[in-house]
Image (cartoon, rainbow, N blue to C red):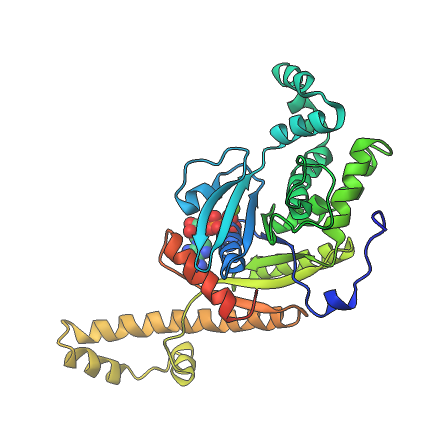
Length: 347
Ligand SMILES: Nc1ncnc2c1ncn2[C@@H]1O[C@H](COP(=O)(O)OP(=O)(O)O)[C@@H](O)[C@H]1O
Ligand SMILES: [Mg+2]
């Protein structure tokens, strides 16, 4: 039973909660930001959530305004209702030392290896090894139960899980399927032995119906194309896509008819000029022309966005939209985004 991939039980089909949320997306679309917002949304109302970062950028610490995260789980935010988000920045080298100790009782040897640069060597020649160390930490946290002797130890099925959910700020879309497909990555490295067993356990968690991959995108051609490709790739390796998170959506201020007129260059310049004059502005004619040009730009953008929205609608996944906030998203901004996720039923 333990080694078989679990069937989707009725309970799970009826919405047993997802326990591992993998967040990917084209770089710069707001992966880290939305992973954090999702963690806060999941913690709201009393959940225990772990937010995991694997790219070594300390993006989470920056976002929550905390000192750089050590390789250790640290609380970063409390939420109303007694919820808590903890965070962990996984470092492949530290994870390797930890596994050497757990599997081979080799911490000292591991430290000697590090001194001689062997860890770098190992992770450089075998990128698959590096990935399994990173996914290994996230999936161990998913399985961990209260009272587990040590990390990586047995799970004691009777005890509750330490975390209700784990959110993984994953590598970008182009790499995520490979990153998560630990089995394939490790196949060439270890056919038997503790690393193989570990990889099997990691894969069992990743393939579980309670693990999903969310795709962050903007309403732009490139990230939308990457999302479509990413969903297909993730499904091709047997994993579940969860949702599409459309980030930085700008509010609409202009009525559809005016947009059409603006796009067609047919705005009533006279009316704009009279408006500018009534507002007491200098050079109302220039103001009117400037406004018309801006509206034409805006109209073109809105049309382009409508086209990519259409393409996203072709994916059979729930889609949640998050607003463009003021630059430099802080805790208040994260709370706003978390609120939007909850309001749309994302968690
Ligand atoms: N909804 C949003 N509104 C405004 N700025 C945002 C939003 N989401 C992300 N950002 C900003 O965009 C930049 C990239 O976000 P980040 O989460 O680091 O992206 P990624 O992890 O995909 O590289 C950051 O400066 C972040 O503050
Ligand atoms: Mg990031």
